[in-house]
Each structure stands twice: as structure tokens, then as C-alpha cells.
Amino acid sequence: MTIQTRPTLALLCAAVLSTFAVSALAQTAPPTAPPTTTSATNTEATRLANRYSTFAGSDTNADALVDGLRNGTATTLDTTVTVKNADGTTTTSVVPNTFQPATGKLGYGNVNIALALAEADLNKLGIVDPTGADIAAALNGGSVTLADGSTQQLQGVLALRAGGEGWGQISQALGTGKLGAVVSAAERSHSQAEVARAEHPDHGARNADVSRPTHPVRPDHPMRPSHPERPMVPSRPDVPSHAGRPGGG
Image 1 (cartoon, one colour):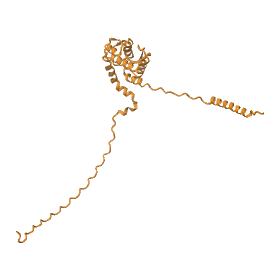
Image 2 (image 1 turned 135 degrees about the horizontal axis):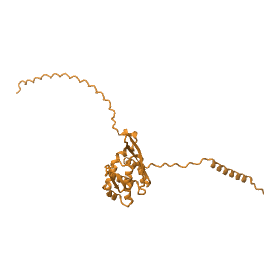
Image 3 (image 1 turned 135 degrees about the vertical axis):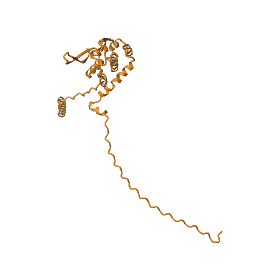
Image 4 (image 1 turned 120 degrees about the vertical axis):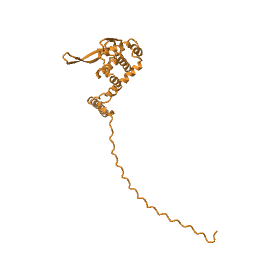
């Protein structure tokens, strides 16, 4: 009895060659690129930075301030200082001030409250254009120089918070009033700047009052000629009354 092995051997060889071909194709095929992920813009951080940019002194300072309070990291605020020299000229320099927030990480809502309280604490002392050192003192505690040259020691919003006090208690301790009123006042005072910065500068003309082109006045329709008055129809003559019949009574 003869056993035929050639077909089996042929199938085996074909399977081996197919395996090598698939392996070679896998090695030569370009690797699939991993899907790219796009980080969404943190609109809350941007909103807060736009709101407090005037208070912080610049957009860069506002970004650094919001980021530092949010993450509990060291924050550097730059202040532009102009000094008048004896010869009448002026010298401008940038003075950096770096501070470590007294608290750890804060949520964006707490960042908003902390900055509103710090701004209110400085405003009640007449400091409406604070330096980086003034902001650091209002947040962490420290002394500030008033307009009359005297100094004032501030307790620090974040220092009080780190001590375990609530935001309402802090507002009362600073003498700024009720917390809700302080935050609402900050939101109202910065709302216009926030809206203006949120809009693209090229779109500023959208809010301008642009008069619409007037439609051309339609010409008056020519008056139709009046119909000539119809001639008066002559009145019929009076019909004479019939004479009485003869013999009539």
C-alpha cells in the first residue's frame, strides 16, 4: 500500500510561506499613529484672568495670579516703575515680586473670592492701582504704603484662610462687609473689561451704531386728472295738472 505525501507536504509549505509573508508585511507596514488629543482651553481660568487683569496690572500678571492660586505654586508679578530723575528725565524699570500662596490649591470659585477680597481690602485703603508687592501683602499678609506715606499692616486673605477661617469670616475680619456684596461688586466693576477682552478686537465695530442706508424715496404717483364734471341734466318741466272732468264733482 502506497501513502501519498506530496499533497500534504505542499499544503505545509504553503502555510509556512503564508506565515512568513504576513510577518514581513507587518514589519514593513508603517506604524499606526496614536490618536492626537487636543486640550480644551480652560475658559474659567481665562475668564478670571480677564476679570482681574486691571487689578493685577497686566494680562501676564493676571494669568500668573490665577494660575498660582489655582495650583498653589509660586507666583511672580511684575510692576512697571517710573522714577523722575533730578535732571527732569524719567527712568522706567520692571520690578518683579514673587510670593508663595499661603494656601494650597484653590478651586476657581475660591480663587475668585480670594482676589475679590484682596482687591476690596486694598481699595478701602485707597490703593486702586496696586503693585505686585501690594497684591502679595493683601493675599499673604504684609505691609503696604499708603498715599500719605504711612504704612498699613494687612492680615492677608490667604493667611486667614490657611488659619481655618471661612470666607465670610475673613470678609468681616478685613472690614470689607458681607462676602456676597464684595464678590458681586467685583464682578460688576470688571464686567465691562471682561466682555471687551472676550471679543476679538476686529469685531469691535459690531457694537458700533451703524446707520442703515436709507431706502430711496419713491416718486410720488402722478395725480390722476379729475374727471370733468358732468353737465347738469335740465330739469323736466312741471307736468300740468289734469283738468277736472266735466261734470265732475
